[in-house]
Length: 247
Image 1 (tube, rainbow, N blue to C red):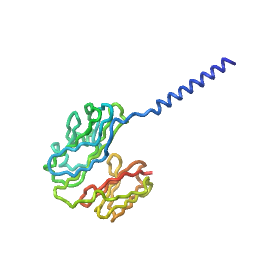
Image 2: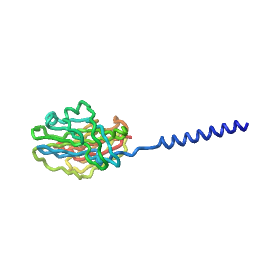
Image 3: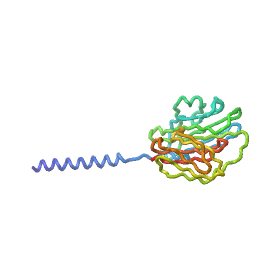
Image 4: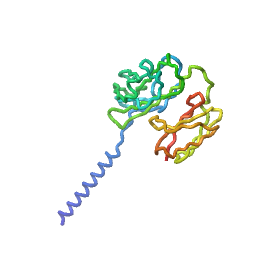
């Protein structure tokens, strides 16, 4: 009887220790290797060559990134080899080699507090296509594959000056989270004429004309999770972007 009791006691202790170990290691989280100042960068481009940095700041440890372009709707004359591409701290690549090929590139080691992991460069000297277009890149920490970031550059190019839009207009979005419908209320003077709903990867999910000061958006077909709304002026310039949660 005593032997049996000792066996049961040892078994209980083994189970307890196992549970404690699983709890400690199972709930352990990693420290994110970077900070994102913003996930979307808006640029009003002018004719000529320019370089635009991302908003990622490396954290407390050295990081090596893999990255690729996951979406892009640049016009053809924005994508010629001499017109656009990305640079990390290793090499520069023309956009046609990155999209839509899905090529995965690897950076060198970024040291703590380094900024601007990716640089988007554009040469719009010979571009004849105006408008607002975007390109999205995704980065992964080589050491921690789940540690990733997505950055979208929205480039608006208008060689001829257009009337300024109100960028700081008050824009209210409700309810948030939402299930079937989403309401947008904004200043009529913001000259918002259209809107687009897109997912976290920058893929367009819906678009519609904007109402005068208010818009009702049907979101019942969207998947649950985070989505974004881009609000455009009549010239195609992005006035604002708002985030919402589909319940």
